[in-house]
Amino acid sequence: MTFPRAADVVIIGGGVNGASIAFNLAERRVRNIVLLEKETLAGGPTGRSSAILRQHYSNEVTARMAFNSLKEFQEFSHKVGGECGYVKTGFMIIVDARDADRLKQNVAMQQRIGIKTQLITANEVKQIDPYLCTEDFLYAAYEPEAGHADPVLTTSSYGEAAKRLGVQVFQKTFVRSVKANSSRVLGVETDKGTIETQTVIAAVGPWTPMLVAPLGISLPIHACRAQICIVERPAQMKEEVHPIYADFVSSIYLRPEEGRQTLVGSIDPKEAEDRAPNPDSYKEAVDTHFRDEMLEKLAKRVPILKNGLYKGGWVGLYDITPDWHPVIDQVGPEGLFIVAGFSGHGFKLAPATGDMVADLVTGGKSAVPDVKFFNYDRFAKKQYIRGQYEYSIAG
Image (cartoon, rainbow, N blue to C red; front, side, top):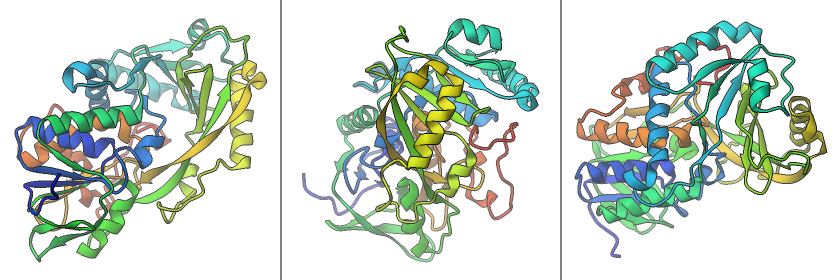
C-alpha cells in the first residue's frame, strides 16, 4: 500500500480507542481516513488490559457509555464483524459500610438508565459464590451481564472492519509531530513521510502529552504502571469461572481467566503514584511486594485461593488524569482532537468512545451526547468530575 500524502482524517494510535474511532468514522461515510500505529494494533497498553466489561459507574454519563459499550461487545460479530472474545461472568462491586448508601443510590441510577444491576446482601453474594468471605460487608451491586473480552482480538476486529470500509491502516509507523499554524492543524510528520490533513485525532494514551506539548498544550496526564498477578485456582474449586469482583474493602479486583486461573490487581488510587515517566521504557515485571500484598488480600477474600499457585503476571500502563476521567475534546488548533486519559477505563468504554468521537468530529449526535462532560478546560478551572464514592477509580 502506497503511503498517503494527504488525508481527510488522521488518527494517531492503534489501540482499541483509535481502532474504534476509525471504524465509527468510516461507518458515517467519512472518506480518506488514515490510522497510524507505531507498533502493531493493540501493541501498547490495550494489549495488556484486563479487559473487564462492567457498567458500574457513579456518574450517569460514564454509566451510559459503559451500558452502550457492553451492548456492542455482546453483539460484536453482528455490529462490527469479527470477534471480541466476550465471556459472560457477572460482576460484583463490594463496598464497606460508609459507602453503602451511595451504592444504593448508584444502583438506582443505573437501573433507571437500563442497566441490569441489583443490590444484593452479603448472604446473597454467598449463594452466588460460596468461596467468598462476606463477613466485612453488608451489600454488593451485582451485574449478571458483565464479563470480559480479548483486547487484542477486539482491536484487530475493529481494525479489519475499518479497513473493509476503506480506512488505510499503517502499522510500524512513528508519528514525529503534528504540524499546525497559529490557528489550525496542517498535517502529521511520520518516519515514512508527511501527511497533509486538517483533522488529527490523538489517541495515544500515555504518549499524548508528549505529542501535543510542542503545540503549546499541557495535558495533565501521567503514566503509571498497572500490575496484574495470575493465580491458578486449586482443584477444590469446581467451577470453571467465578464472577469478576471490584472489592473496595480490600482494594483489589479479581477476574477469572481460562485455564482455571484468576487475575488479581489493585484498585487502590495510591497505585497512581507508581509512575512510569517514560512509557517506552518501564519495569514490566511485577514487584515482589505487590505480589505478596495481592496474594495476602486474595487469600482473605477467597480463603480457598490460599492454596492457589502463583503463575507470574504482567504490567501494563494507565494514562491518568487528576479526576480519573478522560479528555475527549477539540483542543488547541482547529482540527486537533484529543482522546486520552482514560485512567484504566478505556477498553470497556471503547465502543461508546468511538461513537462519541466520530460525532464530535462530524457534528453528529451520538448515543451518549454529553461529550462536553470530558472537556479539556475542566482541569484549568478545577471543575473536576467527581463520583458519588470517595474512591476515584470507580468513576
